[in-house]
Amino acid sequence: MSESVLVVSAHAADFVWRAGGAMALHSSRGHPVTVVCLSYGERGESARYWREGMDIEAIKATRHDEAATAASLLGANLVTFDAGDYPLEATTELRDRLAKLYRTVQPTIVLTHTTEDPWNFDHATASRLAKEARILAQAPGYDAGGEVIGAPPVFMFEPHQSEYCGFMPDVLLDITGVWDKKRAAMEAMEGQQHLWDYYTDVAKRRGVQARRNSGPNLGLTTDTMGEAYQRVFPQVAAELG
Image 1 (tube, rainbow, N blue to C red):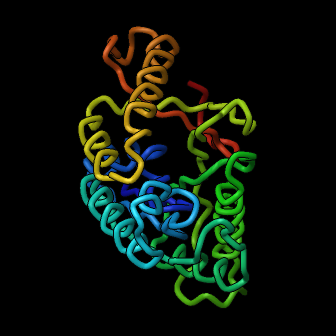
Image 2: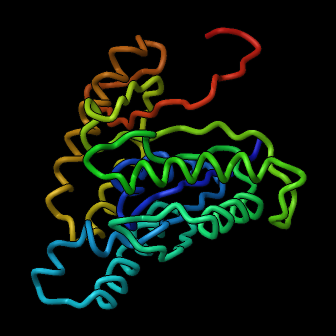
Image 3: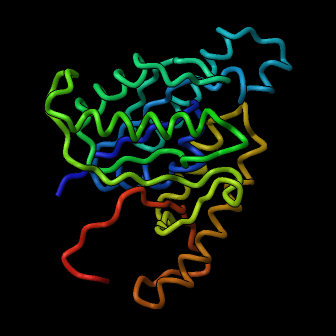
């Protein structure tokens, strides 16, 4: 069955660190993947460029180019809303734009931030908008154009400091086969080089956990790389397993 993945990212780089593996994996299997960056992260996540003396418009342009390159490497279509960051405001207009995108993309899977993130409240705002827009796009009476969507499962991807964000992963995804694509996408985000090795280490740790929890059936090795996710809604299944 064809899947359509929608990633709702607060800033232009968030999707790379946290969901790049899932995006590359689904794209490699022929499924359409769309990532929407609600902002460029021009104020809060571009310290290097501010120190270099760039102005805000130049930073936005640079971040756009980086995100476009990363999305292309992951096989995803990039949509940018340029809604501003620090703070990212959960306006009615922004929520409506996102709901309309849901109707256009018709996602069967949604990936976004955790509900809580005391280190970056833009992330929590993006998470809330992603969930609210999903509900609105399901409502036949909501005037957003297009066809109503189904009930796509929502997966929250791993935050930077998970222990402070109430993150309890219940899905460990094997991204070993597309790790090179994720690492290349990470390196496209030149303004945040300090995160390249950090998220490589995260992928290694999650790979170890995936191997320990899968047993011999999946054939995971000591080189397994992984990503962690937490479901928002219950999984519906015909059987357990």
